[in-house]
Amino acid sequence: MLKLTGKSGKTYTFHICEFDTMEAIDKACEKFTPAGLYVFAYRYIKQGDARNWYDLKYIGETGNYSERDYSNHHKKEEIVKAKCNAWGYCTTTCSEKDRLAQESDLIENYNPPFNG
Image (cartoon, rainbow, N blue to C red; front, side, top):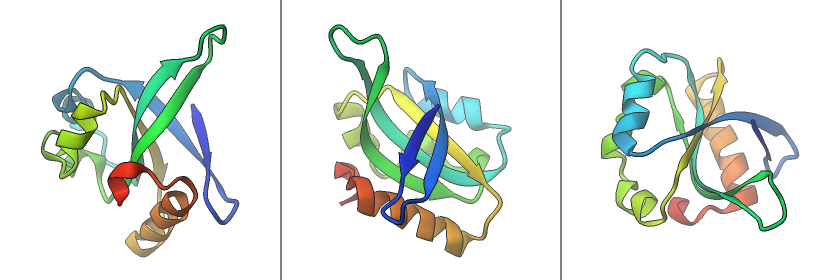
């Protein structure tokens, strides 16, 4: 689990999965139909600290994870070059307008490099 806070102060909880390829994310999401937010990150461990740390690279939203083609994501090249090895999801039942607002809330707080 990864808790992220938007600029508004609202907290979002992401379930984190490790992956080898973007295609592996597509396969995992084939039957995963809810809407929500997602992140790509580089997961690492600091010396002397066994916890996982995440360097956020991209924050996005989708109306249906199973319909989101991650293997053809418009930032795939950057995500692969950055050696991202973690994908997180936060499901929601809100409208597209509200999801976009949540996505913006997080982007404004974290300013991930691939959202620019």
